[in-house]
Image (tube, rainbow, N blue to C red; front, side, top):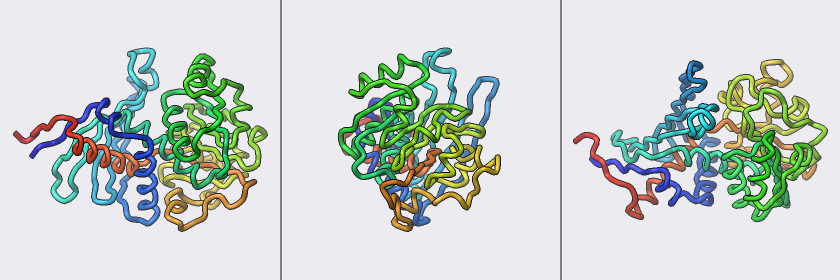
Amino acid sequence: MATLVLTQSEVRSVLTMERAVVAVEEAFAAHGRGETLMPAKVYLDLPKYDGDFRAMPAYVSGSAGVKWVNSHPENPHRHGLPTVLGMYILSDPATGEPLAVMDATYLTAARTGAAAGVASKYLARGDSKSVGFIGCGVQAHAALAALRVVFGDLEVVAHDRDGAAAETFAIQAGGRAAEAVEAAGCDVVCTLTPSRTPVVESKWIRPGTHINALGADGPGKQELEMRILRDAKVVIDDLHQAKGGGEINVALSRGELRVDDLYGSLGEVVAGMKPGRETDDEITVFDSTGLAIQDVSVARIVYEEAKAQGLGRLVDFLA
């Protein structure tokens, strides 16, 4: 029994953003129809090391797997390593055979960006021409790539508390660095910060704006002023995860937002069970916490394409 082992460079070589967007869109549709299995994330908190690990299992469309991923925000300046590192094990659900073991660091960035692209396809205005980024780290590049798959070329406005990071991203994206208020005034806004206090004020948001809230991934984190959530059509990826650590978690815990105030899930929208954007003036928010169904769907296409191209190396772990 041979398992295909794939490095990050091999994953990158076969995983285009176009493929990632298609896989993630199909995964959300299946999730909306109730055709997936996705137990809750398991967290291993390690405050001694200023980080945590997460185990994320899922089953979608004949594929099963689990991602083991960390979040260590101090990694870049302490150890010269990415904040997020991950590995993925893809298995045959019928036999349990490990089909592949692959790097999931790039996979995680790609599937998160793809989710922003899918959400924007259904929730942003179809004539959107500009995107503002508040937070310009690694994930911003993936989100921009996905948005360009959906909308084509976009004007890019970048803001980061680290001005140099914003300038670098803006140059690479062919856009410009600006204040947060300018970034928040775009047709599509992507927030990608670890903030525990709002970085986007409601007065900055114009009618018709779509916001991809991508940064909040733990209790107490929030990027948007409460009023934005109260005034917007809020679409979550998964209620359980969003309640525990998504953009809505603080508003819910304070009683400033109720579960009944949420519009629904992205899966319901993609599956056609609920309409997405309904008017040009409504403000929409996608609360993205990152789902294991995204990982397994993208891992499957990586495995199939790498196998077709003869990439990676086969290892018999039972030898």
